[in-house]
Structure formats: C-alpha cells, structure tokens
Image (tube, rainbow, N blue to C red; front, side, top):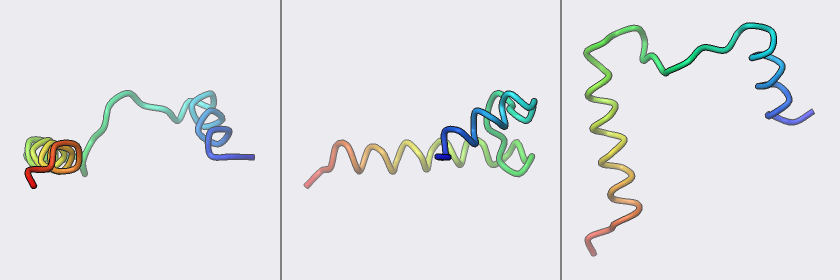
Length: 48
C-alpha cells in the first residue's frame, strides 16, 4: 500500500472534502495565500 491507495480509500469511504480550510478561521486564508505566493515566487523566480 502506498499513500495514493490510502487517499483513494478515504475519499471512496466518504471522508474527502473539497477545498482547504485553515483551522476554521477565515481571517487566516488571505495570510496563507500571501505566504504561499511569496514562497513560490522566491523559489521559482529568485531575484539573485
């Protein structure tokens, strides 16, 4: 069994949900998005 098998089993068992939720606090969603975009911009388009 690999990770994918576990994920597919969980989804087929009804445990899958669509979309991410950060601790149920809506105020954290914009912070997460900004942090994520900052990280990937630094990784994929470094300035130095």
